Amino acid sequence: MATKATPKKPPAATPENKVTPVADKPKTMAPHQIVLSSNTQNAVGILSWSKFAGEVGLQELCNGLGEQTVIVQDGNMRPIEGMLYQQAKTLETMFTSLARRAANQDGLKQFQVNLTLALKAQAQCRATLEALAEIKNPRPVQFVKQANMTTGPQQVNNAYAGTPSHSGIQSGAGNIQSEQNKLLETDNGNYLDTRAQGAASRVNQTVDAVG
Image 1 (tube, rainbow, N blue to C red):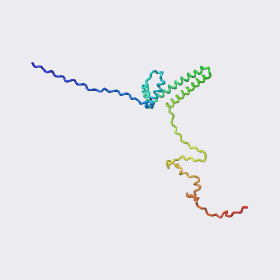
Image 2 (cartoon, helix red, strand yellow; image 1 turned 90 degrees about the vertical axis):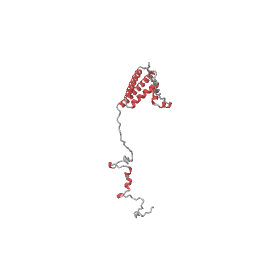
Image 3 (cartoon, rainbow, N blue to C red; image 1 turned 90 degrees about the horizontal axis):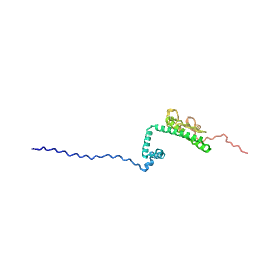
Image 4 (cartoon, rainbow, N blue to C red; image 1 turned 180 degrees about the horizontal axis):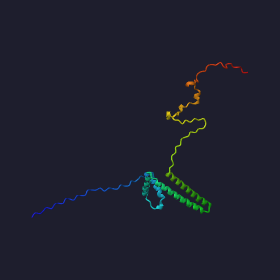
């Protein structure tokens, strides 16, 4: 009895060597780059005054500060406006607290110290609100024409060499004739020759003896 040949199974395909992507390593900054980075410098300054918030990571703080900086650079001033208003409210609270503290003092020195600090907080609050108002409603730019004022026998010439001829303004100092040249000028633009020798005259020729 003939037996059927069983078909051979094809060899299992060997899995190809797959390359797993490696995450990009964070770029490390050189010490001089850290010192020159405004973002890092300000993050370190904020970190030194933020102990009330607990442990804050410097790298996370740098990233967050950089994101907020990009928002402002793109022209969105809403974070700045909110910050200034909140700072003004904080200064207002400081003014009220210091003013109440001054009112409760019996000694003159302590009264003056607390009242002075209260008025300084009030002045800073006003300056902060003025800065906020300047951002919300910027002042229009004014172009003021220059006024040339002189004292004594001085001449001011506002014309310049580039003045068009049809404007009716004589340009340049060369077009201005001084009074001295006019006195030395005769008819038809002929100037007197001061080097020519004058003709002899018989007037007052005799000289009387002095005695």
